[in-house]
Image (cartoon, rainbow over all chains, first blue to last red; front, top):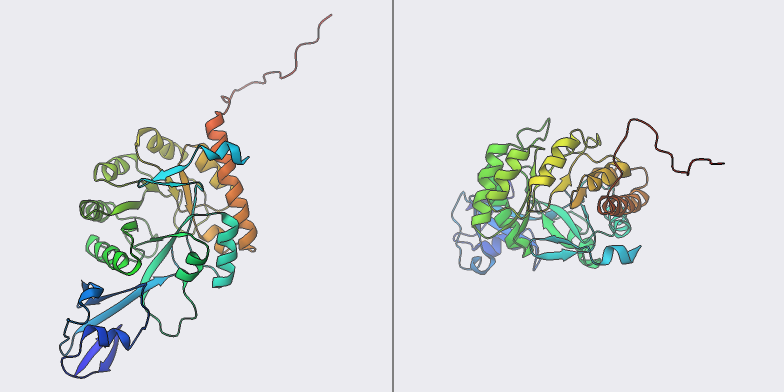
Length: 66
Length: 258
């Protein structure tokens, strides 16, 4: 199925976990946060959160700013 | 000089800081230059923005801060609505393990001025949620009062638009805010050079937050050192109490006699 991670389409296995989707973008153990369709999901729930086709995943971190 | 500062910490959100200079990290040409400037500034609290992970990005601003023991202050830069800002603050809390947030809700890309209605809404939501909210606000004493009533831990008025380097355009409003506020007033945005930072402190601000004036200076490290000194000088002058301004001269030597 296709999901969107940080604005880019990715083909992933059906029923993929958020943890797996995040790992496609970042292996950071700290300093990142994830949202699915605009809703923040705590890291502790990433492995139990299953994604559906068309879901939009955002993975954020700190950058220079302000 | 250190002795005069030791019993005068900045108390913000229940935490004590010996430096009254809060730094931003935007605009630095490299992480190396940024790191040297932050060290020269003596800052203990520094802002970052939250953006999508870029796997190609070399190094992290978080490492630059961690190596120097500088506390990270996430901002909500780029948010135009209360909903966006609240969501960004929650993501930042999750990513960075802090419930402190520099709350920015801007009205448009041209002026980058705060949207007061959305700002107050976001501040109320986040303060009720337990965040330590440090709102970037216009230099409006009435809005500052409302933000304080909403539970903000400080109010952070602009001196002039972000990145403009125009200094403090309405020092009288900043003074009014300082007189009325029972939370720290932090001059945020508009600083162009060291004398602007000193003036902010002389007006009674508790701290200064700046980025562009340092990161886009010809020599960021040197300007950071200048800002550090300016904030200290301005604070000491505020505590010392300036003389009243007079229209005519007052002789400083005794009159000639005999």
